[in-house]
Structures are given as C-alpha cells and as structure tokens.
Image (cartoon, rainbow, N blue to C red; front, side, top):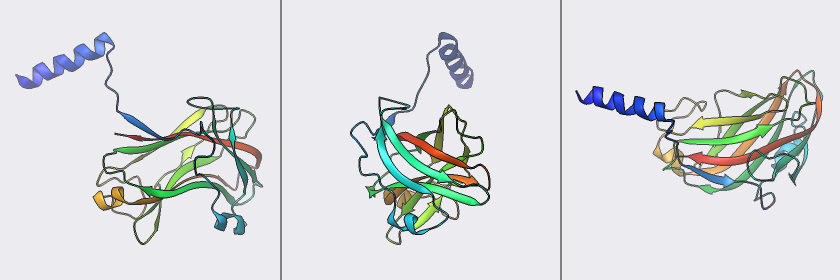
Length: 195
C-alpha cells in the first residue's frame, strides 16, 4: 500500500511539472578572474602538453558572463593534452558529484575530449576519471564525476570518506588522441559540487 501511494505521489509530481533538483555549490565561476587557476609548471616541460596560456574571458560562459579561456595548440598525429588546475585544500564530504562545463567554439574540429583529474591526500595521489567526455563544437558539455563511496568514475582508487575529505588539486584536461589538430581557445566554466 505504501509503495502504491509513493508511486502515485511521484507520478503526480511528474504530471504537474514539479521537478526535484539537487543542490549545487559553485566553486569557481570565473566571474572575478582566474580565481586561483593556473597551468601547472610541469606541463610546460612536457612536449605532449600543448596549453600556452590562460585568461579570464567574457566571450563565452555557461553561467554568468565569464569563463576560463585556455589557449592551446594541438598538432594532431599524436596524443596531446591541455591542462589547467587549481591547488587548494578542499573537503567534499557532503558532495555527491563534481561537475564543470567545457566549451570548444563552432569552428573547432570534432574529436577533442575532456576529463577531470583530482589530486588526493597526503601522498598527493593523481586520480583521473575512468572516462572522458567527447566535446561537441559550439556546445557546452558538462563533465561529471561521482564522489559517493564506491564510485567507479575514478581510475585505480577506492572512493571513500578519506578520499572526499582531502582533495588537494582539481584539474581539467582537454586532449586530442592523434586527431584532431586544433589551434585556438577552449573554455571551462561553472565548476561546482552537486549535493
């Protein structure tokens, strides 16, 4: 009987157009500049990392009026990546998910992909997402990583409370795996926790 009542309540909410949305906490909106984001110094020393500089931009934004612009030069013919990061202690124990929006302009080629990378704990463990997101020229694409214990969204790591409590760095990486070649701007915006 209780199950039937719950089913009717959910159906009623759906029919009336009422939606239940998760609470979001915006961590970085780039409305006040770079907000601590930078290109890691080691990335300039790696020939397979092709980011040149970052800026605050009001050309494109998924929310508000500004975003983080990454200038990159993907040559094609080999794997290359462009990476940006913010380094600070973050406690995400009350969050279910990390998300951010990435945009490539309409004139960019198909084939670029993006992912989130975290650095976690006292050992500064580098933790990549277990999948990357295909970027669509001219569209904002939302990257999402599940932060709940037991999540399989992260490679070679056990997501638990200790993981969520001690985030040291947050990176966004856009890459080209042999194809395509592209020289131009990429945009990151609305970095947020979903609770």
